[in-house]
Length: 338
Image (tube, rainbow, N blue to C red; front, top):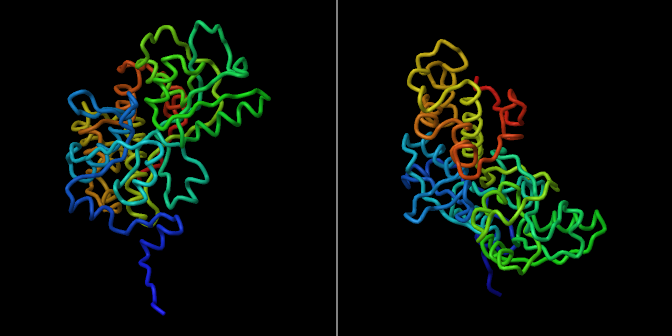
């Protein structure tokens, strides 16, 4: 009888588990010369290329911040557009080093996929958009409505929960991609379209007649969005997590792209530690002492990234709300660099 020897990779594929990251992700990225970043590709404000192929978005800029910290060059990123269905597989297989794609942090995703969420870069919640002509003022008036939704998302599950909780009948019309679901809604195949509220602001701009549509007031779920990495490489997990925290801390300490050079001379001990003038905190991550300076100088602090991509400096004009710093009534909070 022949003996069959399975490699760990093959065995993992058979039983459906993700391969853990080798404890050398940073070394692999340096050897490759670029960060592979999985992102949306279809969502204005978060991750989307323009007609010339230039990528913009909050998630896109987060990946640029990681590249800035590693290479002192924010352009050393390869952006990989991923559907909701394929995003986790791409990260599990190592096709991308980090997933920064408006992805909700949930318990099952943290425990069953071989992946770890590294933090929250955008606090969101699910909502609905509907044509004004239907004269619907609340999601509670959507009994028997046909709702367009993207497959393979928490959005689809939340939709079912909301209708069951409120004892309403639901006609779900599902699609593989966001654009397909939106097109179906825009052509009248559905009465309403549901997605994260941030996405509703984005996709409304894609509709044939944006002003004929309204976002309903209800937020029916918690959607803490953030980057994911593979389990098994604590150093890489720490780098991705602390790049995000550094962007929060830089905003809180008023270190910006414009004043980063001047702030390098600051007498404030928090700023000195953060920018590398004091201590070796970057080196503890496997980076350089000036890792946060690189991030802010080349990409910006969190507030700058928010404003230009989804805030008042963007077509979306989303208010900071929950995404303000903790010092200004929001939820974002960077642990201290010390």
